[in-house]
Length: 341
Image (cartoon, helix red, strand yellow):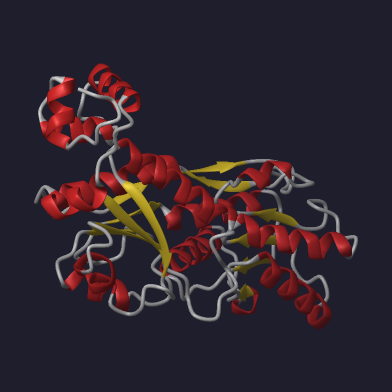
């Protein structure tokens, strides 16, 4: 067969000595196919300059092999895909999806209109949905789930829902962050984050439980319901100090970026970290270790979370039972907080 001849999938499969389905999966680097077979088929495809007609394949199988990942951002937020934690989650999801033979289509809640099932699934843009974040309202998620489309959510896995949610143990994370600060001698601890979010609500519950267990009063004025950005935290800390002075000695931030904004505001006012104020972030992004001082934080295993989300989605494709998954979190102690007194 001439190498410059345009091959059909059937002709290429015969040339490779495999079935058409095996050839298609091998070309898509599907891990269900042995690595030796994938290598052989892909090398032959390169030799004959062959590629699968994606449009024809989708028409034939009624599958796109694409998963839509929706960043569920709240209205009026300045948080975006540029957020380091969201970038990490998306990167880990892309790796986990690729390992199962799927491509990732990235979108956000503003672009996807109100009917996610119709926009992505009915229109054949994707086979399933992975939604990153529950936001302050689950209305759109619930609407999509009610249509029966395959979906999984990154968020608070303790939420009472009829769709699977994968996420860290947020209440324990908030509790560990707060008890660490209390053990270091902090008496008035700011909570920087909006408890209106499902995940942040659980972290705030942990923050309150830590105070109760230490027989410390909970001052509602120390809860700052701000946006999940460094800019919001920077503005909040500056305003708080202008209004009340340095009337706190610890900060539980709901993300490392929020902690970074608070850290910047305090350092500009020559406040000692951690001598005057101890700070604990959340997520353990790469920047956390590079900050000065390096940031004590709560680590979330996003790589494992991505694998679990993909597992739960594929289970739905196969009509298998699904469930929410609670992942462990870990306190990473660095230089932004005092050690136990």
